[in-house]
Image (tube, rainbow, N blue to C red):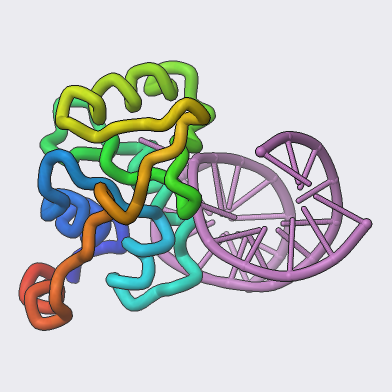
Length: 113
DNA sequence: ACAATGACATAAG
DNA sequence: GCTTATGCCATTG
């Protein structure tokens, strides 16, 4: 069975362009509401050539929370803006407009098998 | 098995 | 709004 990282990747791949979600939301969808940190780590270790849209995952406040220099905030924000995601003057994303609603459970379940 | 680690979340000051 | 402190959990050495 797929490891936790693998499940994170599969789910994140489902996030449509121009939408964002949070680490905690991903964790909840996977059935581990408390594994938000692990989700963050999974995305951090995502290879750059990967097809996982890691930039679409931000923290629960709608802000970019990466501390990594290589894949820094500037890069992540630029990638999102290219997709049409807007940031306000304080660096927040409006989750009402750009938040991903997620997948219905049956579909998630199918993805995980 | 144990301890450390980390792109989180939440509550409190 | 910002800074700390605490809880959480899969992965790694």
